[in-house]
Length: 322
Image (tube, rainbow, N blue to C red; front, side, top):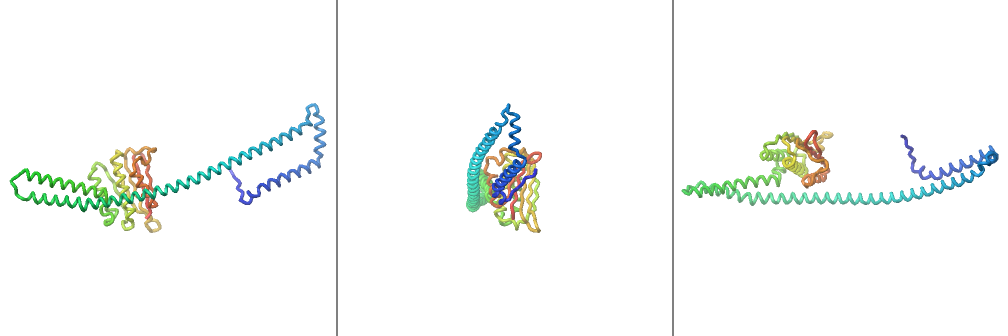
């Protein structure tokens, strides 16, 4: 269906053009009526229908014309009032949208700040665990080992020392595991690829029943620390959610840097499982883990996507420009 678009100048002069058309039509009617003597013809025709009062119909037409003019005027006024209300609503909606956009930016800035504070607290706690808790546990382990080597005839003392040594070793392993969770090991030194491989290796030791397929094609030198940390945390959160909610037994992980015009332009992470998926209405769920990851990705001008896999399972994908 074709639509006619008038330029701004035509719209501005459209009223004048319509008035000119009306004036031209009126003058043309006057000329035609004078040429064909329409008034005399009307009188002669109406005289033939005097029984039906056809000569009075002109007054009916006059009232009808006046009524239509009145009707059109009222509809015009109503249209103007409706248009005014619509403009007021539009202005209000634009104001609300601007306020919402401002609040969204503030919320994202707040989430980014909270994330940074959280990472700083994690780093501080990791340092405390490593420098204080870990060192004292190592000292207890060494002292217990030395004490065990001394010959003693008291088997109870030997059992106590062995228990102390085993407890210290267990706590050191727990501390080491917590350190990996709080602060990615070697992310700044060995790079993202090695840190991801270490995370998956440690996770698979805790959950050996899962079948994991990994594809990592990354140039670590091109990935900044914030981007690498975001990807690491996203994988952590995804693996945690899979073990808690997915009921899956297979996981596919793809971490790849993409090239455009002979340059690396972005890095993408895709995590797919064959679990039960999630309810579409729930989306991100009630937890803050994935929401925080999504906001981290958006803060780096990236894209975050979470959707159901076909035929079953969940796909989590993110792309971050380099």
